[in-house]
Length: 359
Image (cartoon, rainbow, N blue to C red; front, side):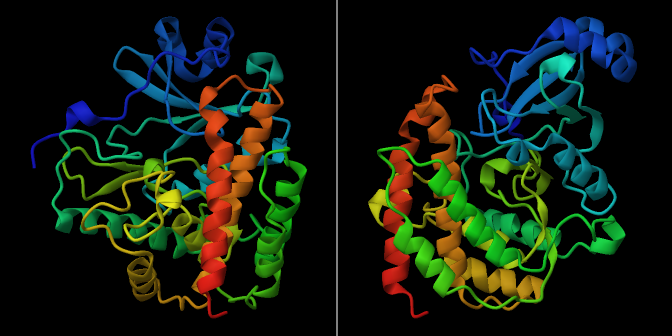
């Protein structure tokens, strides 16, 4: 396959209302980057609805800056220090994570915590495969399986070797997630939000016993958080957006990723909001992904309906929280306006999963 340099993920002009104070930032980073800060420029990556990601450059040198969204009051959901800590731990055990460079908790700089990390240049695939990126169905299948193989690699990292045995609270993780996201959804209700009460009840009733498997979980693992090599688009070279990473049950992480997975046979109301081209010819089904994941990791995947339904519900909770910020006028980003429609779609999909489930 020919080089795909023209498809490398691009940063653009900073969105209105999300600008950084470049003068202050330059002086703060001078001890870190030296005289390179004199020519420092800032652009913004377009993806994501949560933490904001900026490209900093000076000549041929490039870095990435991460900060919480403007207007957010949920500090625990945008813990820059936590994100920096797990990147520091992963640096020696998981080769796909960016290298952490600098963490700042001084609000006088940008008004929030933020951190600097290495820039990984490569291809990021979002909702559609980009024009010119022509994969055969067999290559699509290979690429998507590679996506989940790397997730399995993350779940297989030795916690002691990574120094993350105390990073999370794996005991009771599943219960805390169901209860926590139920409370967050209710707290972010707007007048046009759907009723997830029956879904919450089903998740509590069908909650499986503790699996006993503990691993590092990403908690937002999807295609546009992965970077592919421009020389070999079947090869993952980076995994981004570690803001929700923790230690817990890998099956919950798998379920969260499957919550994004709109396959070819899914209803149109769900597929219209897909975040990645998971319904193109060659793309594996959720059942095929589960089988391969289990074979590669050695983790038995039972009760998949529960984990998939939770993944859908959690996405609805995230979407509702972001939409709430928009509805309250805390952000001007017009991308958020349609999120309420996606929340309704996720509610319908949860109903479908529950109606078909043998649990």
